[in-house]
Image (cartoon, rainbow, N blue to C red; front, side, top):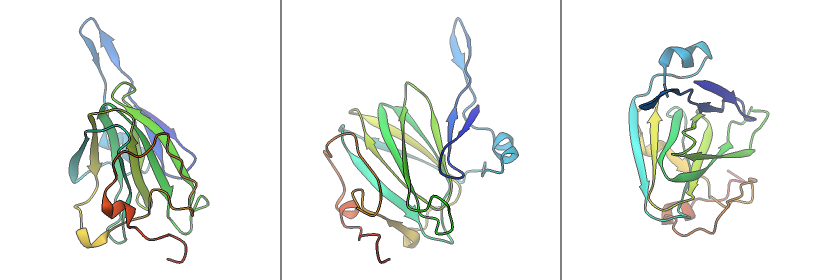
Length: 177
């Protein structure tokens, strides 16, 4: 695996290193010891799947409040997504900055998202599926989010929104929290 550190501290894009032969290829997508060598969380307590029927669907921007803040490893297993994060760590030099990458079944990249970042995505194709590995059990009372179009952040989305949950539309402005 190749760990590519991105502009937000602790955020990594992971690229598989395929070993190919006449059958196809084999590539490692997670190794606890390789994560630990870099000081990253490498043990995950839960795996979840998000399936989305329509292109343009937005989910996010979600996070869990401390002490239940989650580290996630996200991979698109079918279709493609515009994956976005916002740094909500108050002491971070990149506080309130966002970053987006394309994850797809074709590029097989993953995104390692440290605790303290809000996460969301927009589907770039119909019938898109995303695999989440999460380092701790979900605590519903800690679940929170910021609006996908909150002017406090520099988020841009590549497509018109086709579907978004009422919950995601109802998050309050970040300013003043």
